Image 1: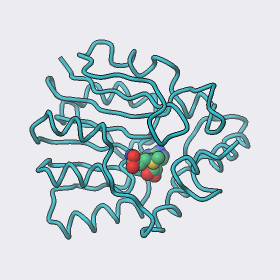
Image 2: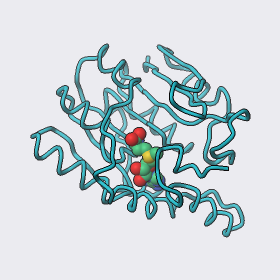
Image 3: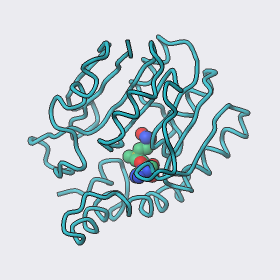
Image 4: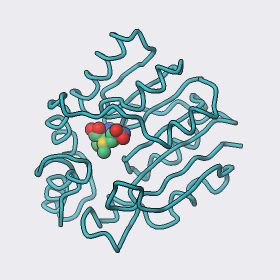
Length: 219
Ligand SMILES: C[S@@+](CC[C@H](N)C(=O)[O-])C[C@H]1O[C@@H](n2cnc3c(N)ncnc32)[C@H](O)[C@@H]1O
């Protein structure tokens, strides 16, 4: 099985493979607390980072006028920077200090409006402000207990956009642990009270594993 990190183009040893090992050592506890250490190493290799925004986010940006956005687990800020370029006021949060330093450096150089915070979303270090955002983004980060906060954090009429790995029994590689992947239909169920503008569960071109993708509007 190829470790999860390699599915993102990371070298062996990065990403949640080590995290899963650590979790297993803790008798299956699904904590993600050792993940940031791995991502620190990844973001230290700044030259190899790709700043192309998510195509799904590009769709959203084309149909929405700029407002206030939150990019959860933003990483090095490919999506946050894209939104800021379009005039959004962006809050980017990630547990990796190296990633947030990249976001801060780029936004300062471009004089973009990005408030970038280092925070572990599994702790109380960062709380999503209720009705604080016109747009909340979640790309490739699964933390189930954040969904209620995300729903409360989007202003009425605002948008949630996400792409997260979903269980894919046909995939030859990647994580299978329920802690790391959505169940089929799970993301749609989380936003069943919202207007669904787009939903799919499929393997996207160029990827080896299925993702769930959603664009939903809060009523
Ligand atoms: C697969 S990367 C996705 C990055 C970004 N969303 C993107 O699509 O480019 C996962 C990100 O989650 C962050 N992360 C992992 N656990 C976290 C936690 N508990 N709190 C905040 N960020 C976390 C990692 O540092 C990493 O940047």
